[in-house]
Amino acid sequence: MKAELGIGVAGILIGLILMWTGQRMCRTTCWIDDAFKLLLPAAYESWAGGLPVVLIGAGFIGHAIYKRPRRSG
Image: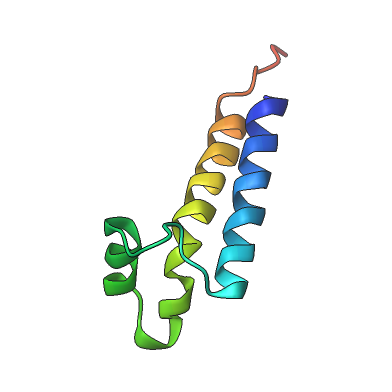
């Protein structure tokens, strides 16, 4: 669980940095950047590079929390 949480937090931090700087995931344009650019409003197109990484990181954290061992009570 700790590894999944670490990967999730790292993914969110990397995505936030990409969104803050306006950078893209790919060196040149790629399909994932273009897809998110089409989905986002024009004011938020600079987020297209980091949003997929943030969503993947959130998915890792959600999976780690959901699949953690349950205690029998």
